[in-house]
Image 1: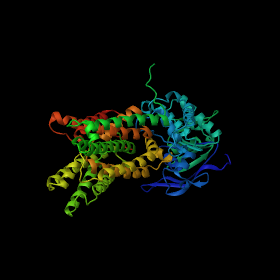
Image 2 (image 1 turned 60 degrees about the vertical axis):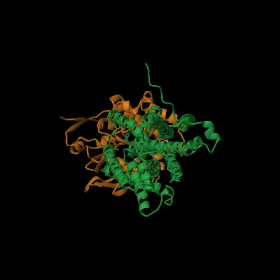
Image 3 (image 1 turned 120 degrees about the vertical axis):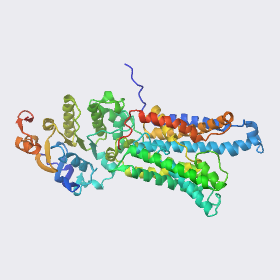
Image 4 (image 1 turned 180 degrees about the vertical axis):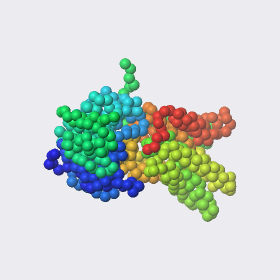
Length: 258
Length: 351
């Protein structure tokens, strides 16, 4: 694990809904240069934790810091230049094109009343190219397939040029080739000094894409560390309630037993 | 392979070009509005002889009417466009959401209260009091309709349309009752106008200046709100992560739009569907970017209402009676609403 100070850190964060702790005293640090995967069964609290890290859900107790400063102390615009979120579901009203949506990622960087300059258009096109979606630039978003929409939404966050990037199941609609390409892109971003956190359901993809994994069960963080230490059959069987075995290789593979 | 023509990126030049072109259209419409009418106008006499009947028709009747039409159209169309963006609902419109109805009720109650207190419309500020009543009524309607249509912290677009339509019908009926019960005279004239008319009321000389001021304020609010409105297209959460405060933006624009819509209703009454028809056409032609869409809608809306009013005046000859301009806009608006509703654009998902 790296000793660099975290870009984004949750300290003993708890979120309660209807009397139940859906995130329960979770501490998690996202250092620069690292891809952190959030894994766990449905309803484990991964998305809520991501929302807390993004500043969208205020924790009932605990705190989140961005660059060592409490998240709440940042202005929304300042924060938007440092921190981006790709939600699991894209919801877009009106007939925007892919490029126009990606350009929206530049908004936190534009002075009030300024239109996007050539450099912003270039940044948007670069972002689309990084997710292999440049050919979709002028297509209406609503006419794209779910996987294409997902890549465009990742490009929108990339255009935001954040220091910390949070993604909620960014590969759920992607074909295997694009899923692998995206995991390589996340590693590339980390290598460039970004802090990346990703919710994954595909554990094998998580093992490949992430430097560290955080396993959540019932709102609690039950294991955190390098993938080969977190992904043990005993721990996963207990977490997911299904038997599995592990195949060693360049990356750990998990095979679920019927 | 044929592809749809690419939408040009938004630049200052494109913004200026589109605005200039639509301003020209609005100016030509205003000219048509000055020249068209039941009585043919001798322009030379109207401009040359201040004592002529032609001059009176042009300056005292048609000019205020055209100005009222320009402001009404601009405010209603831009408000419709902004409400659609704010609520992520392409069917939003000041009339459909009950904002116009609330404004009309507010203005009517102020006018009636003034009469009950024995004040003539002139002593209640030449129409300023009615404008203020319109603002409060419009704001109250918008807040109440939004609150009633919010469940689990989310605005339900279909509920919003239903509640708004019911509220508007209720307000319209109440207005009819008030008008039937009101004594003949100044107050009945005011109530009649609230049903939708661009004809000037000499008893309320300040109502147009009040409208102009409210429109200007709304324009300033919309100018700073256009980019955040764009980001709302991504949903409130993503807009937040891009630096927008959706709730603050809604509150700010709700107040500004209510001010302008209230002033419009107090001045020219309930003219419906302008905020639905115009922004939709503009969005089809120019794309959804509010930085271009809002000024373009304002200019196109100004032209639309002035032309619609010239249309009803031109029809007054053959028909033998002058239709209210709101009847014409509603005749166009009803089918537009249904067409938009049926178009599979998932317009009614929760925001």
